[in-house]
Image (cartoon, rainbow, N blue to C red; front, side, top):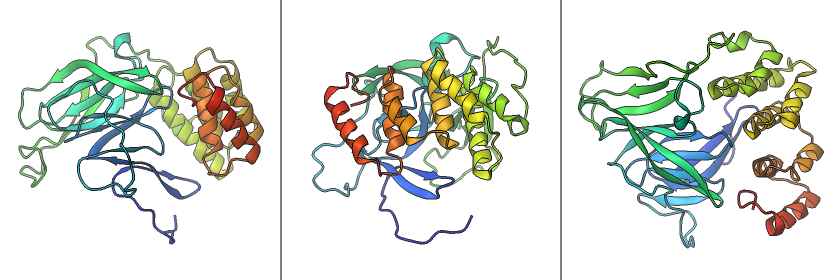
Length: 327
């Protein structure tokens, strides 16, 4: 990729994103302090874990959030957005992953997993929708480590449904200097008796799969697979190698799946492979499900130039839609 030159984007803390095919850098939200973990749930709602300030945040695009220090660019911000947590853990957190797989019991589904640096632990919060946002309630102390040098920093849910944790493993937990340069490690935490089904292709190279197989993964019990599959489909679309019937296969899931989570996966898959027309997204503004309507708004606004008639429809929805998520 060529290095792009042009006007810079003002940014002094927060969340940013980069579009891999449009080559566009954008600020999603401003604020926070040391946000070391970011993930989204099954409805595409974004969450951040942080240290120093309270640990859990629901990230709304365009939001201006609590800072540890410094000033917001806009000096007239009346009140920035505060934490969604209703409890406190000791100090710093590293990593965040919403559990969306099948190895663990059902009560772990949708919980956000995070490492806690000072407690030397893996903790969870329970994310509960409330109004247009969320409340993060205390989950459980999932894993308490009896080694003071254990410093968890990054999390991932693997293709097997296990939780993977990157352990810095150093006595200087604030990182002012690295005392032990060769002690880092990766741990996998899984159930003694995993509930994960060993379906065909679970441990295969997804890049070798057909478009149809990647589309089928949008209804997988493992979100690791559905996410990776969408990235590969997006790459094929950008390269011009996507099969001609792939959009129709995704559209079938989007229209007919009984699970809104699967419908949203197909919706995102259609979007990243240029499978939606403006009219089709406009029709989604009338969908029965609030999250489909909300995502239609976001996708219609991605290039920041919705048609005037669509803007008028947004005005009507802002006044009359029953869902706080949509509004």
